[in-house]
Image (cartoon, rainbow over all chains, first blue to last red; front, side, top):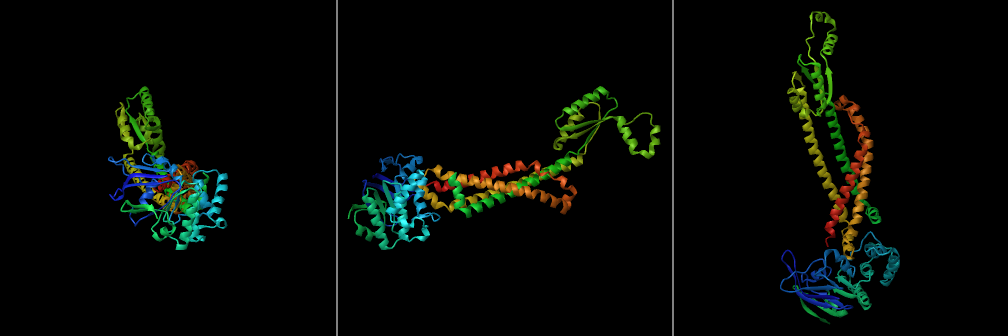
Length: 226
Length: 291
């Protein structure tokens, strides 16, 4: 679950990126976040992953809760615990070119010191789920954009996250593949994982439907189902 | 540990570049150090050849002469004390003037004074040592090689300053080279580090493999630099002492033998390589870890 109450973010250069934002996304929900460039979408994601901190305001009590973690009170040394409950999907896939599909997915579990036995069992499972079984020994450069994003999805899923944050995951894909990826995200969501997808593709959102959160000039200007 | 070694193998171009820069840096600084060490040793060798003669007055009796000998021997800046009696001095002159031996028939009494011949350990402190000696009684005259000492002291301090400047400059250049290459090496793995941070790896988990990687590369560079120095030093000494005028005068014996410093140098190479590479790498990673 994500819960934000009266949250503002001001960068060191004085830019007000988010202004008194309140938002609640329940477990198992699927929400699109839309908005123009510079509206505050990226700041919202960075806030949820604790890349940036909210303003510490004397007049208002701000609340940020993600997957049971209180981010206003969280110490820097505990940030990794929060991130282990979140799966990330990036616009540019962010795969490691020198690793095969299998290793890119296994990398996540190796990073959190998961037992080798579990890695050997879990990675093929997820790769199979995303339809990449035949590509497990391929390198990212040998894959299409859609396949690369599926690898990124597999990587996001492999650690059984409570929440998946997808930052413009279809930004580098053609319309048909984009729909495929969103459908996959929906399937993941159907299995109980909360999904927050940032996009600027309004057509895609209309076509898929669901909860839509629009951010404008650092504030939530629309939040409803479409 | 396994991850650190795996990183070296996976990033072989960056690893080879880091290793080469480290080895070359260690060799540059190491050879400069060894060269300075040789020059200092050469100057110290010349310095050891200094001799001060203390002539005593005729009224100094045996007991006093013995007492003065004790005082000189207890001075920590005097390395050698030899008593040179007036009889020995006369015998010496007689030997030197073999063909004019008759002259000595006209001398009733030995006119030469008793003397001490001493060697000064640190000639830069010679003045204060001689000042103390002059304050003793029954001292007729103290004969010291002041010109020699002044030239040598000047030369020694000039060598210390110049070699110090060269050494520090080279260290800085090498440090910049190492930090650039480690930064470039880490930069190529920026994506890897970012992903690690996003999937919840701890800072320690991210840094330790880089630390190990730097450590292994540093130790390897230290070992290779040691091997190259061991092979190169003897050949260089041979070449310098036969091919160049300045060093041929010294001969190969004027150089410090390799076995006198090789293990110390190897230890410094390995330690410096490991330290610079591991800390350089970790410092470069630190920037990326702050996500």
